[in-house]
Length: 632
Image (cartoon, rainbow, N blue to C red; front, side, top):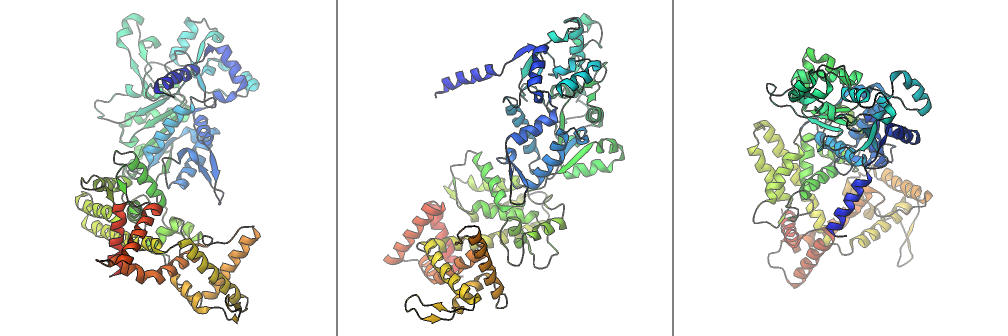
């Protein structure tokens, strides 16, 4: 489809969204689908659920609405949806609270709010998210407010819909003067949320308190019409165009809320608790909107320290939004930010972003008092990887040790700035992990808020990330050197399992060539187990654990293979690599390779490019670097 056809199709879609009728017509729509008259909080919750909810192995829900933009905050998102959105959608008291997202800079607070705003815009365009308003109302008012209070119990009994709120002054005047009280004739139209057009989504940002007016929130008198209508209390002489007016039926965002002048915040007391606010010389004006704000921890601590703020504080649900603590998810954050730039065509070598992620996660972790748990082990555990001597259940214990873990450390914005510095070099077609670490290290000298003590600690984390990269680099090259790696691994695994089964069952093993019965090959089994630190005393327990795993797989009708046991897989790999180490070392480090070595290098380079995501530049750099590592 060409662009002009798509433009024509878009206009047709826009036209299909338009609906106009009377209040009597709207009542029929409500009878068929009471959901169109739901509250703002219920609409937002339904929007999140409509995007899809998956349940993981532990029974935890995973909300797909956030998955393309928010990474590594699944526990936070679950708490946010269940404790606030879900409860508020069911009309529990939390809907009368301001949702305050509190956390460090660049932690995802603004992204969450932006997702909700963009999501509402899209959802209101769907049949499930359709909503309607009194035509011409400056506040896009719920048409059911037209029903007099005396008739509402009868309406609620018949339609099963609860009505909250009253007509705005503008609509009240129109009903009386324009329609003579005949509410069934009042026009109703379908509305579509739009922040740009100021329909159902409002944003308030603090500025100079001396120049910023409360009218930004609640609207203002239109002085040009005072002479015509004769009074400031006439709705026709008032502009209902404040952010609280325009956000009605949807979402109101307060950016850096706690930096606002107090006079702006007091308006929220009545709005949150009673669902109305005061504007001009009118009675209280009803508004149905979710108020979401965000701030950093320092501002929040200062706010709660002030006793004058207790009333407002009691009307808040504070949701901590920490930094991500999973390496895999941190990599996704960097990939997303790089893809949004014009430098997405510069090649980034495998493990470059992962190495940066390891560094940044290390800065956010706290040293555990648990014996045998250092920062690197903690990092791997949080990332869902197997760690010798530790179990999945230890993760909960470690997280409980420091509830505020992730509320400090270096932010993704700093890391992506340093990655950008490496990417922008004019002489490069490709950057690798060492380029990124070098850029991070150079940036520490330019960072104004880093003390000498902090710098020393961060340089130590750079060194730790470098050591992890060294291991990844060696593993990558050694893997590429193993011809038909999976086949070699499978053969070694089968051999190991045959011997383990014979050992645990006190049996002999048959030589495949001679048919002669022999004792299990202890030397072979130990040469593999020692690769992952299995001691002589622990070998039987490890071998029995493997047999139990095989038995479990068999009962479920699954095949036990090379990837079925993480630690055994690691042991097999390390054993293969250890056997190959001398070959790799000689081939990669020689300055004048012979014909055979050159052929091997070209073959490995091709495999790195074809199977591991390297380009010719970073593949050659990796081989040179690994050669120097193996020669140390």
